[in-house]
Length: 70
Length: 379
Image (tube, rainbow over all chains, first blue to last red; front, side, top):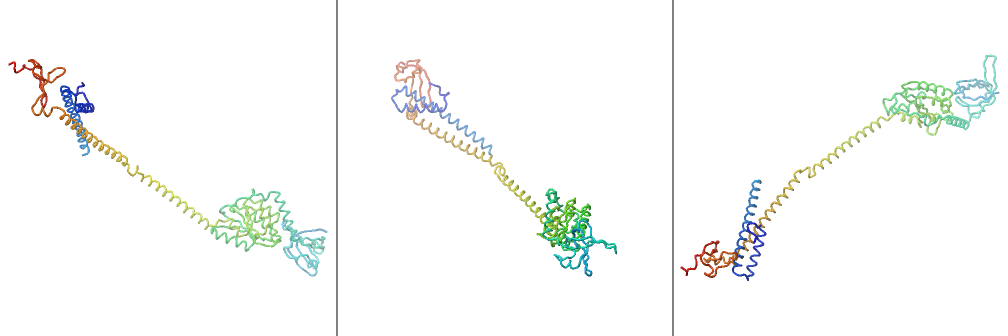
């Protein structure tokens, strides 16, 4: 399995969607589903980090532009 | 017996004899003749001074006073038809010699220094030419030569005046003017000697003899033919008032043309300057700037919307993930224990975890790894 730290946002999100779909479908034993759930938690955390980073970049860019216009 | 022809210059009746002097108009020769008085009375035309006649006579010498004359026994008038036929023959002769050639016509100056005028003394022709020319151009200057303009002496006098005026360097144009008259009156102006003298002039000659229908030969040899003396004056002298009007009109038109040109160019320039690129040079930049502004605003909106949408999506996925997993149970204080191995199986029995077994305990906020000390029952 690919280390999550090296995955981009879209890749992480798409895998998260797939994880949720598999868990909802059910039919997995406890070991597998626990492992899958932990993987999902990490993917969700990774996505949130990506989004927070992106938001920070946008805000920074907008702030510097506002400075220019002021 | 000889036939002679000439113009009567004198006619005296004395007793039963008529005494006459006959003159050759061109050759400047005279001859005395006499005849019975009855012959004069019976002449085919009334004889008077100036009449052109042909006479048949016998030379007669009066020993008493030494005079010589012709004793006339027959008088014939030179008929008008005969006169016109002679003029026509002379016209053909002169034409054949090329004296009427249009290429010989000299142009008359626009404004002559001095106008030579040959005309009868105190004649209507003289008055007409001088007054009409003076009205048109007040500064006009004339050199007038008064001559007789009919009869036997006319040709020599006119020829002399022509030569004199032609030799005057101040004279730029010569006008020969005479009012209308009978064919006989106008005879000198169809005279061969006079016609040749006019042709020989180096100064342009204007012929203004008689009225419109009269057509003496000098009209044909002259450089310009004027219908009347008044017409001659109009031709040789420009109309000062008309010229002034023409110059004024030209000045007015040229000034208007120039003003219109300036006006037109100004209009073109104004139009060019009102074009957007010149009138508002920053308009293009402003438009581009606004475009950038709009694009930036749109990008800002879009990226914010995208981030919000993705955030919602992730939150949604996290919530679903929470309900699917053991999070709620873990939150209540339960934990899940796994045997640390490749398969990471969940610990379900104490038998599976003898002392020394590495275990991973998962709780709500994470996991810890520990070593088993064996089952409680073994202590």
